[in-house]
Image 1 (cartoon, one colour):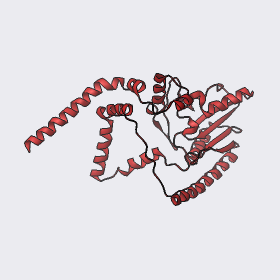
Image 2 (image 1 turned 90 degrees about the vertical axis):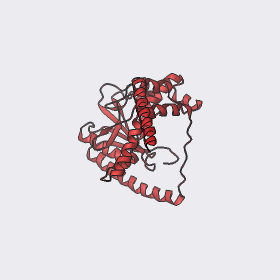
Image 3 (image 1 turned 180 degrees about the horizontal axis):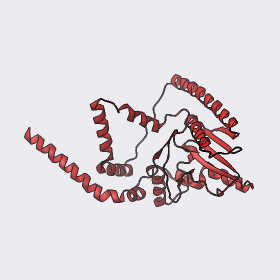
Image 4 (image 1 turned 135 degrees about the vertical axis):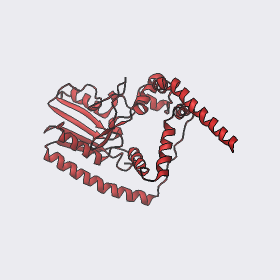
Length: 289
């Protein structure tokens, strides 16, 4: 028994020291490692569409788009993309950066939507909002400023909440234009909501639930595991397994979501009418939407 305890204590000591060693060597250069040695999980056709064909620049772009962005809490609506400043991917207090937007305009165009609207894996110049701004300027509508308020996992319900917040904060003025791009997240489950649910699920008075969940989160945050994740993403190409859902379940889900979406559209219409906003809703051309 004593021998087993000695072996366990040695293993714990080795793990502890290895984590400290990796932290001292790895953490000061973690960002550089992820930027320069991160995986590129795309084929040549997708890379060409993205428009960042230099592999070094592409790795930096992927890092800032995903691993380097994350989210901040946003009161009343849930979350927002964290501020990022880089060559191709920028987020500030006004949302995703829009190219060629004038410094001051008579009217604003606020665009709401999900990650498609936000423009994940798109350079600043290739987002929907940036394209719209260029088109407006090209057609001499230089007094219209476009703002990209797309956010990851946002659906019509949360878009309405964000619209209400912008109205309350007086970001929008009477006569401004509001565009909603919906569809892609109305049916798909939100990965962020799933995480919140999981976090809340294990916050209880049950000692074992709290301990094991907290311990698992602690392990994921250790230098050794984080270093392993970088190596794994570089050397291993994971294949995603698609979950097959019965057709009847899909049909029932679609009907329920249609009802919810219709109610959200009705509330949106009332908001826009009451505050004299020019609102338009478009459905994204996705096969699953």
